[in-house]
Image (tube, rainbow, N blue to C red; front, side, top):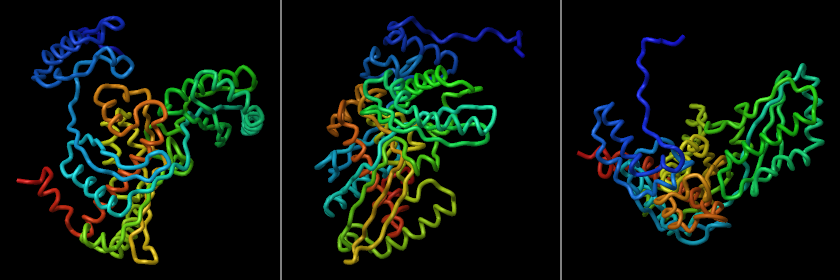
Length: 397
């Protein structure tokens, strides 16, 4: 029920089309916000960003949030897409984060680098179909499998890079849940798969009688939410980073031993299980978020992308062997925010900008995560964690 006694709300300044993305309009919006909130907006208007390039990235543009970017490296990667040394830009306001990742990169470089492998690549949209009963739902599932090629043709007609590779099926009562799995090239692909799946569903509705209702997204893709299905089935890229660190290096650089690190990992694995966490590692979200912000990724995808399986053991020689699997890493080198000024520069630093770069970026992110895992876990075991924050972070006097 509306309250007619309320005054009409003030309207945010705007203009039609490209005129809405100008320095003048941004200034008017800052003045509007300052007048109504009493805030002094001194820094939002200082930026080098070309406003005309922002259409499709933000609405009601009024300024830029400036996040410090630190440099870590060199990161030595032995990947199938990323080969050699990389200098890694990390956007963060957390003291000690860049220093910790930098330490991990230094140790891993001395150990011979980080080996990276992409195991799978897929992005989903998850429509559901409602039928009068489970029997009709089952029959539709059979038809769906039999007509995969036609459905794929309808979906792929909307995109030049997306390819439908599988339609997963799950049934609950009279509802047939599906997950349309695509490869999406160098784009993250959420919008691409949404458009393609809409076209596929419209074709399905034109060909199949008996569907009472359908929903383009049934929450089974778990967009921007951590989920067990994506840890098992993959969303985005499933990538593994692994390394062996000689015990001598663990002792001299990390001030602990390989045996102590393995014992700590066993306790941490159980602690994660006890907590019901979707991550048995230490802090993959730190490195992923810092790289996401620096390179123009959708930061909300950290909710899924930071899921991780960590595994460690000793080699027969007594060295520390560690691997981390990121089962749902969502990143892009084309589209979204990747073409904006500072984000493009950071991608170019990594040699990843544009077409053909996403595999390389995936492996760099995974290798960076591993370096951070090694550094933090060793700091905890060596009882240097709190001291590091006292020296370099916000805890210092």
